[in-house]
Each structure stands twice: as C-alpha cells, then as structure tokens.
Image (cartoon, rainbow, N blue to C red; front, side, top):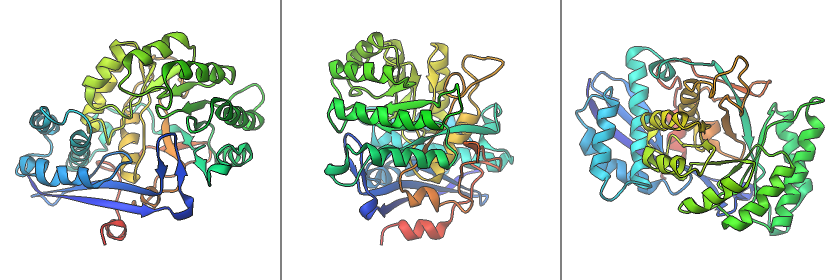
Length: 395
C-alpha cells in the first residue's frame, strides 16, 4: 500500500454574536485544518492538525513540507513516517505549526491502518479498557460584552443547562477578570453543581486559567479553588515557566494540569521530571498525533502522572481522542475505577462549533448518563461529510 495523494482543508465558521472569550483571546470563529490521505488501494484516511489558531500555516506545512516526504510511503508504517518527518523539521520546528501538521498526517495514517485491517484504532493500540467514557463539559467562558463577563447569573444558567443535558462534570474558565470576580464565578458554578448532585456526592469540577497568572497570583487563586473542592487547576502559569509551575504545584493541594500548549514527548518529559504537573493533557491534534500521544501516556504513567487529554476541534479531533482514551488503562488500577480519579475523561467542548457538530455524518453525541460511546468502526470509525468540508472551506 502506498500514499498517492495528500490534501489539506482549511475550514472556518464565523460565530457572529455567539463569540466568546477565554483569558487570552476572543473567539469570533471556529476553525480546523483537516488532512485527507488517499492510498493506491482506494482507502482514504482523515486527520486534523492544530488547535484553535489560524489553520492556514498548518495547511501550508502539510502541502509544501510534509507531503513531498510521504508520497509513495506505506501509511501503515506510522512510526517510520513520524520519525522521518520530525527529523526533517527538528532544526526549526520542534514545537508549534510543524508538529501540528505532523499530528494531522499521523491521525490520517492511523485511520487508514484501521480500515486496512478492519479494526478500530483502539484495537490497534492494544485494545479498549472501556466502550464508553465519562465526559466533562468545557464551558464557563466569558460571553457577551465586558459588562456581562462577571455576571454569575449568566454562568449559573449555563451550568444548569449542561447538567440538564446529562453532564456530570464541568470545567470553567478564569483569568480574564480580577481574582475576586473570578473566584465569585467559581463559587457560583459550584453552587449549581452541588444543588444538582445527588445527596452526599459532588460532581467533578475543574478550572482552567489558560496561563493567565504569574506564580504568586496563581497560588492565591489556587487557594480559593481548594476551598471550593476544585479537582484540578489547569494551566495556572505560562508554559515556558517551569520554575513557576513547580512553585505552584509544590505550594497547592489542588492538582495541577497542563499540556495543551506542549508538543511531543520531549516537552512532557521536562514537565514531568521538573515536578510541574499532576495531570498531563496532550492534545492529539497538536502534540504529534496518536503515535506521539501513546508515547507521552507511557512516559506519564511511568512517573505516576495521570493522562486526561485536551480536546478542541472538529468531530475528527473528538474521534481521535476517544480511541486514545479507550486504550488508556486505569491509572493506578483499582477494582472500581472512578472518572477523573484513576479513569480518564473526555473533554467535550460545549461552545458553538458547527465543525464539531456537522462534519461527521453520524456526529459524536452525549448519552443520557453523561458518557460518550467509543467509535467501533474500522479506523477512526467515522464518515466525513465532504459537502460540509466544502461548505466551510475557502470560498
């Protein structure tokens, strides 16, 4: 089998008045860079590269740098392809766009491999520990104009809506407002979660700062999160500040999570060995694809660090994450694995995204009990609607 064609697609969907803010950026559109790989047998694999930035640089990297180096190669030789591509970009692209592009190519090769062998990707990874995974709603962004960002009533309505839709775990944002205003939002969301939880239980609750704080402020915020029983504090400081991460992790009792801004096992090696994190969050579309995510997971477990991947993107990104999560063992093992304690969870973004909701002919959906089923078809187990690709592609 040989690769005979590689095509990238830059998709964009403007959000209009549904736009929202995190601590670093406003989101006025949703975008994705997809890659389609075709073989001489007629098999076609799909992948996705990049997180939320402009998709054009990733597409250019695929088209002009990676494609000439994989045409004619066997897509089932995923590790060989990955290592050769990474060796080519090592001198100038160890992080960022180049690795994001490799991620998309790698996912597409795994999709082809599963189809060729008539097996889902999770079977090729060694098998599935679960056929469904508990999900958590990623929400609680800042919406409306600045005058509404601190509106706890608006946040409470959103949290209640997620719970009504079946979610039993939640992550919200901090970092755009003052410490006092953001902690008020944290407290308001916790109030709704506790009101809706069965007696004697608490729903898992996480908070994400998108690296908004210097270490000393992150510690102040973290103490407030501890009071509300927050399970993990995500990206408290900038990803370059390993010393700051270690300072925060050593000072606080709340678990520290990070990894969406990291690329390849080498970055995660440094995070782990420097004592920066309790939870590793590789994004499969950014960190190097499925091949690299598996290596990161093995490295993390070796040092007692939990793995709960970051997920942000189209239905392809969701499907890739689900296969990866299916293959993760409970860490550590117990007779009764519990989500977010020793069982991985699926991050299920709840912000507007037509590329997530309409790209697949059979969209990935939430079950009534808050779980999401692992695709069981060959490869990614999905069918991409190419009419939707055309709809959101360049006009």
